Length: 404
Image (cartoon, rainbow, N blue to C red):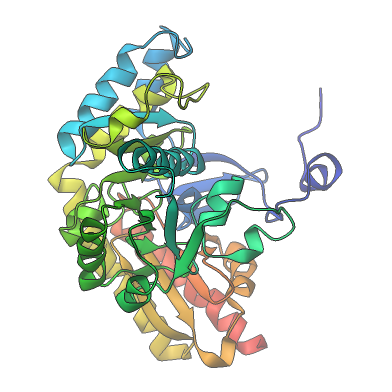
């Protein structure tokens, strides 16, 4: 009988682009996980906002098992029923008229940025190719998406990077006015910056971007890879703000843990992705689309979305109570069940040090950069699990402060 893999096997066999925790989870149910030794953890990390319905949710397991007995893969030489059903569902539930499927958020953004440039090329000319994004933004790990992203550390050493991309200051409309012109094809923005520190957009900022794009015949692209599919308390965060983009990207929670990404757009823009202009081998995969349809139909209900807002208040209440006791956070912020606690000046840059302590206390959490403790739990996590998870976090924080 072969031995169970260990954390040492990661260092021995895998490329060192990640540095995972020492614990290896092997089983999950709802908002709890168990490791190789049978130790239990409450999951506030949610696979980085992916496991929107927790682990092994019955609706997703059922959809996967049912589709597994039918057809797994066809390629895009053919279409398939789950892909068509998912596209119809997303179009009917959003601003969009058309959907494109791929395998990840990075691929969805790659498609969105290519579409924006191709649309401008088709409708105005080759000179209209400038993309405006924002500092501290994150849009994926392909060379194009890290270039549009506003964190140079992710593109350093991979040059030359694609050109004609400029970065404004998030939540600063004047900085966009200084850059936008009639050669701008798109403004790309996260309604809430995730990797950049869990920073929600100001409503006037997003509505101002919509006005500027309209004035300069540019497309407004919302990256909702992290903020979408119920995370904000709405199916998509643009609904929270009442600002409608021309293109929206979605992934992470869309598949509830099964890899899938989507780009949604309008009939005005979609024709520029004509036959042969773009593609994805696994895009529209029947297994992925069947699971995603079950996820969307489960999440986009008043019960779940209203529950997100209630749980947001509960998380914030507990985080602020911890802060009153230990004075560790400068600010607690976020929308719905994507929350960030920025470290106080005395602990600046040390958010990551809390994670292993939390693991020792039986809690999984995240960071968003060096200075923000991030939480992206299941949208249906129970109130009892929130309270127990926060008790575990408080014990970790107490140890951190004591040893700081």
